[in-house]
Length: 437
Image 1: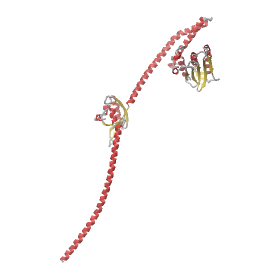
Image 2 (image 1 turned 45 degrees about the horizontal axis):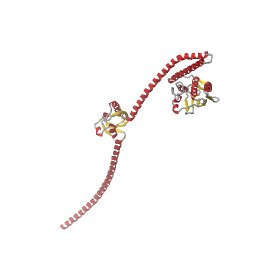
Image 3 (image 1 turned 90 degrees about the horizontal axis):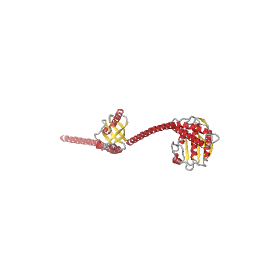
Image 4 (image 1 turned 180 degrees about the vertical axis):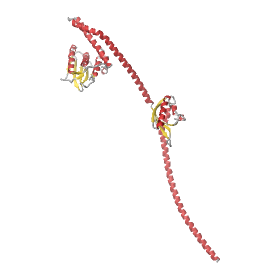
């Protein structure tokens, strides 16, 4: 019985142990599979973390490279950049700013930007500062900076308020542009302008004094000249016999007429310079005017042994002008040609139409003029070196002619070469097309 119990106990024990072993083996198999799965998951996560770590390292390298490039651009930019706190304390500045201020980096620590602004610019900078933080928009202004070496620097400030992560505007970024060269040029231009204005005012005052002197002088000359003209004319009329007395009387009369003409030219030129020389314009036939002047000048040309030619088309359009003044211009040009054309020469008086004006031309075969003389030929009181031998008058005729032609809305010009004669010409606009209307 006992043997059977022991046998039974052994069987139970063996059977239970085997089952337990089988159960443990089953549990071990499940744990291994789960553990292997966990290990695989961990290895995948490790690989992913390693990949992310490599990406992070690359991003960090790129950020460091970008930061270095930013600092290079920031430091070596041609424009100064400076960051200020709300108390205007300098937080950061690039090399261009330090060069402008003439300081070392250590010299900017705990310094206020206002320490470098000249006193006269403090108010302008304060207004700019208030505008920046008041409107929170970009503002610009100009101030003068005081370098460490005591020199002034004119600059343009472009200022922007900057916010922190919470959106609070706590500091200001300012771009500084050196405009000293521009400001210096502006000051030099202003000095030149002031000088030119002063010279112009002095010239105008001098012109007024000269005109007044000319007016007074002409009046003083005209008073006795009027009596002289009347007396010389009466003397010529009353002397009946040819002889020295009549010759002297005619000489006096001609000289008095020439002197009267010079005085009139002086007065006309003075009136033209101050803008009170006026025209009495009406429609006139330029062909008739040219023929009449040619007829008047023919005896003088023949007396000097000169050939006078008149060149006119069958018809010229009418012009709007002052006949007396235009006749005076043609007389002046003709007298000039008579004066400088030698015996045996030719003078040609020509008129023709060239839209939109009638052109009157006086050409001679005289000595001609050098190119440098042509630049001043129409200036009053200008005497050419070539004419000093036999010229008369004050050189007013051509200057007055230009003034009269320009009052008519025309132009006057000259073409000449030494030894080949001269060609003077002027234009008169047709009726209704010029300044004389």
